[in-house]
Image (cartoon, rainbow, N blue to C red):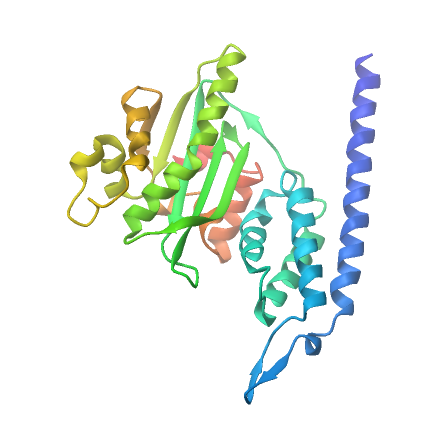
Length: 283
């Protein structure tokens, strides 16, 4: 019986990999047929790299398909897809090149296997990091991951909903945006008979003081922060969440909040895909 179940699981995995390869082949054929010269226009003597409406609709369709198809299988593409999702209206030639580069990356990593493991079901590691004023409208970007030790069980990479005046406020708003998901995971695990402790790691010491002390740690530059964001402080005081400092060079959530390159990109991606142990990396 166990042998038959194993064969069934292997067959499902093989079929899933085959469907993924077919989809990647179709998408690759799509973007290689379109010439970059089709995405240009002249306006008042200036040459603009714009995508026409037909290609714009195709890019939006492909980005949505990538998000729904690879969101769980390839979390490493989450930041790129998240950024391209904000460029559906009025994308330019640079966005088109980003999309083509994304497709090349998916094609190259189509056989990568994501690993998820748990060292201890009683300790849930939550890492949140934000980037301040990175969009044209000066809004920040939130990146967060949740892990039980090996790989990640959830990730977030999205544009923030409001403008902020400082990096500390951006971090505080991002924590408020992502923390409800780990709390939901905590309630789900509690219903299964476990009571996990949420370990929230941050690299901004000013925000850590705001999370722990609330308004008492707000200076003249942060008194304007809306009181609704201090519900995190209430959760921490209830004892459900513990906050600790994480060095910036080990802040894995940086992968979800900003474009990385070189050794840092490879190292963080290995952790996110479960190829490197999270706890070993943070020590």
